[in-house]
Length: 400
Image (cartoon, rainbow, N blue to C red; front, side, top):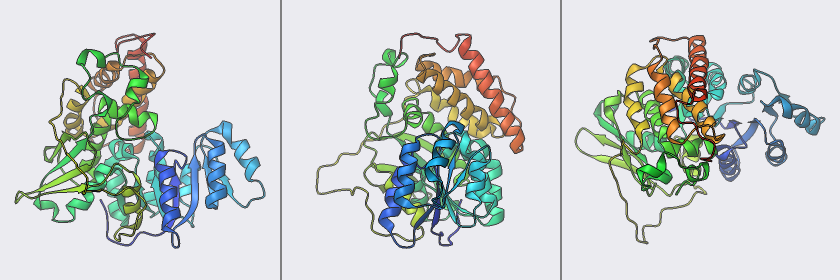
């Protein structure tokens, strides 16, 4: 969902010490005049945040881990940089008068309140936090439309769809095709995937991302989240969205129009490309990301998804169709299951079983408020944790 007004250039980055955040800072530094970092946020990584403050000179920072606040506040005392902390730190940060654009790069549902606050305060939103729409698209999209707020996608897949879709009208789109790399387990024997180690799951063949996103790529839950996000961003029913496996990660997604034309966006796997486009839209300027060299041999492969290998994909249309609180439950159960896997409490295969069990146990509420979504999130985490403790997910003491 977007409008064509030019995005402002005073930028707050939520999650500045993560992969998206650090890439965004590189892009903004490259863009130069007219692009100013005015606010940064981090959870931990104090040393990295302080280095970013020294280099980019924001006027404010938010710290969401209470254990890090004193260190950051002491280091920045007398610098003129405002330090926000506490439960509303991110919301207060994005509502500042010297912030026009919020780049939301916090992983998980934790970023949702700040994203909603940014939209409600009229800020343009560059969205890398797919969970915000998965959990609360029914709240976020109407708010953005009512206030004329731009929501521009930062995920490479949604950026590709956004770019290709501009070649036609929404009613001319036959379907959207999300591409997936297939992660580290695309060719692994099925019997090996169930008890894959954490190191196996983090060994992504093409992208370098944080642990949560990389594990989601290995299970394909990242694609489930992106599927639901695409429904909200582009106002499409789930029947108009398909997924294909594309190991090279060069075609980032495609749009098929009713006349049979298929338009794709191609570039090497480099997150700086979609980040820059979200920040400069509707203009394009010279970028620092890697360029596609078609003078060299290049083979592009596409495969239908293997639902036996990636059972999580079966949940994409189901959750999108059910709507309501179902997205919040899926996201929360997945976060709980990924944390349990990373801690060695369940097998890799147990992630999908935990999410499936939690969704099946949930009674969907069709038109939730934010409080109802928050309660669904809490319920899903408790249900998933109980399933894990009972050992039903596939407990293990040695898989990681």
